[in-house]
View 1 (tube, one colour):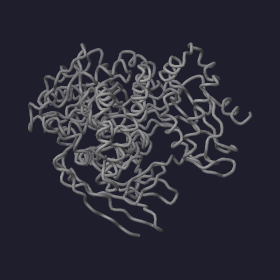
View 2: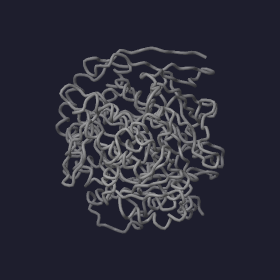
View 3: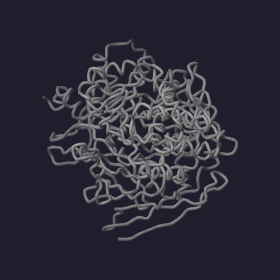
Length: 640
């Protein structure tokens, strides 16, 4: 067993950060089995997240900490003083309505300003928040409300509240149902107006880092969702170290205000963690409730963030849309040359930053300067014009796309984590990326690879345990200090982690070959004509794939090839389209041995959607449901 530990000086002129601490690695039988990075931030030993709005108001009352989207699409800045006052008012309202310390309050809403107000107000009142996806079925919502013992729920819309109505007799603990659209958040503030601020201060004073802050239920690709019990201390360990590591995102550059537009679900721990980090670092935070392009693009244009949160699917969509637009305008050759230049530039930057090369050559710099106004700037302008960084998680982005964005002027911080780890456990370190990996351990985190390849995580950001009302509260999830993730991965010599698949998703063919489907699926999903892919082949003679089509990509392909619109079922049998997809499959197969490669595929006439039960809210495949609903198509791949 061996260890390594060093520090690398960073470019102070660029970021003003003194040192980047590299991971300490440990080997077993010549293979790196463990990597860890010491904490960058001091452990919080007193107080809670509820203190953050009030600390900000005391330290910088006029600092703009949030911006609130108005009905006409403009943004109204919210100062630290104003935000603290709103949190105080709603917290007093919750107390006035009879909610007691430790009570659970559920929030069912899209990514809206009120979500963050309610989060901090609930904490200030000593409560525990329970997020509900607004897309949850009535059954899912009922299960979470019942399991958590929530005494109150606040929905975004009247329709959501109405849907819960028939379930109320089955939820004996639920005493209050409020609705944002009916003005109930303002009504809560009015209800508590008669209470002194001291009522909230007493509640806040009862909280410590080990106090339960939230129950976040896993979206559940299999089985019922489990409630992850995350404490205030879990969030502090996560966000404080993330702020220190990702200083380009959370520290304003000279003459440029740092800002984040949050449009991923706040019901997911990733969105909540970043919202808390922005409040903690006093980075201007905005909320965008819709991911639809016609809604999101105007929000990006008006808010003009410096950083975006994204999942790979979104970055793939941005790239494919830009390429389709260039092709429609007769500029495809220019776009593809620009892509090649950007990728080579991004890879050259990586080589210089990791000490493996001199960096971009003079000719490559000149080529990049040529294509910047023609291609890259237009791409950045579509995201608001000021985006310099993107934090990406959920699944691996892939080396090709990460290199392109880096070369186009958007630095990607790719990360890996779980609900159970309060967000990220590994992150791309600034100025030292390794494309195709999910970075190093977040400071304060330990990563271990078990004998079977499973990733284990340790650190103060790891959940206290799983919520189990039958067992009297929280059941420890990692009694030995190591949380089994269910994911498979590898550590390289410098401590960078690569995700190779999920233990439960491993396909074992009839010939005994183990195949991790995720790399194939992620690679194929980046194709402009493909929306989703699911690789199958468990106990089968070979590996096959179910492919769904991207509507925008197909519309563009038909237009460019002079095709008339046809029903999806007929399009799925189009020989020319199948040939295009076949070439994509052949390219993906080059990564693998023959027994691991896709031998056959079929195009489904419908896409996988969350509404149909085929995707989780975070866009992960529900494999059992897909296999059940498309059993006939799977059998057809094997001559059934």
